[in-house]
View: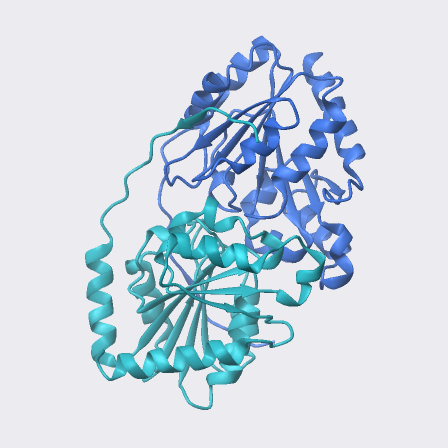
Length: 224
Length: 224
């Protein structure tokens, strides 16, 4: 392969959001509300996956959903059709949510005695990873058509995620996607990341994710 | 469909980048260097498309490429293998390039008497759209697996683009993607946007894009 020159461009500095996130997390712990932050590129299947997860979990858990988008309300409408409480957050062009914005969303959702609230973050593999929302767990989705090299190019997203769903495995035969290589790249970024191959369209693999999430919530409620 | 409450979250304010962009554009005009800003989500096929465009154009134009990524240099290496001058820009976590960063890239590329330099922006459908890079034209790629609703959710990207390539049309039979609806949504955002369906993998449709780009460069050089 060719060698090329690499030029490092300066990074901007973000205001400290971590204290806000810790404060929110502590308050949610008091209330027994498990917040899950769901992140991915545009179009990797966040809403479809979430619909499947809700189907698998809604008999056991009271669920709320916050759909963050720059514009449109199609996702919140899709989620509301499942019967759970849903709110659409418009970010006014912002590319991510921080803890203060997540707090506004939770107040707007008025989730009451929910066990689980899912924040579907803005479709973006870069910025959302930089801001702790106050969530207990971060979940990322990477879909087969995006390619298995994404953990190389977007390191932070995979570093901050507790679990990665590899979505659209039903179309894997039509793409040059190698699950083993992808797993290796994800574990380079985060050796502890749990990885679940799924197809949100067919439902394949979703039960395993639901079981994992239910277990995480149980252990968290027990105070671990 | 269900109705849901919409909560508007405050937008942050960006520093003014437009003057820098206009200055860069004027300087590039002096030099006769046409800068094309290529944007898309992660994994929609920017680099593969660019490789195809270079194949179609490199006998007629002297081309340089700047590959912006947060990490890795795989894309610049892929481009360099085509024989054109390429540089990898690492953004240090930044989610976009502005005009000042683009200028650093151009200086690093040292493109000499190139006719065309392509900036492959960070894979992100949100932030790059907010910053004028100084480019003459903005090109976006939307790939079939991402879904035809993306112009609804990411309005600014489609507003600022002169041309949109709908990539991966070879796998359209396996996805719920409607080209007519997608075209309509793009034109809602930008009635003047040129739209080209392509498959960077098979090469289908790429010649039409190359012809369009060559014509744009010719007209621009003539001072239009």
